[in-house]
Length: 130
Image (cartoon, rainbow, N blue to C red; front, side):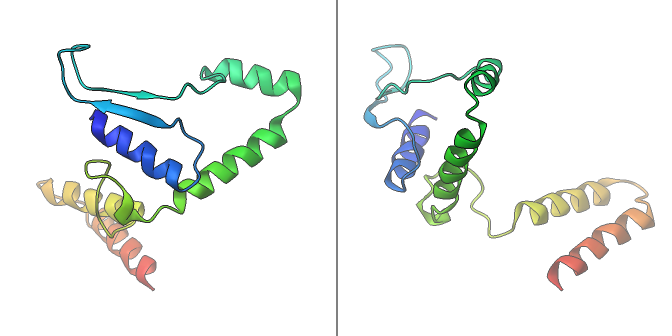
């Protein structure tokens, strides 16, 4: 939803992630047929092929890697509790734990789950917590 996206951008900006500044959010559908927000224009390329050609032509791969690293570091420094509602799972489990739990649920739904599959999931859980 628009409000969630705008809220995420505002939090990201607060933590130093290079994102467009959100000036205004409107949920009134009378203006453009749906909710929207107005943000600062960000100069640059968004098409991956153009970006890769630019990096190669200008020889700026190391600079781009550094900028991306700093941006991702700032993004990952945001405490989970600051994430807007609706952005993603508010779950203390890691992505790996969620994936393994989903696999277990799928195995449990089978009529005759293979014992090796079940023990592989169990082994993954045991190794993860050790």
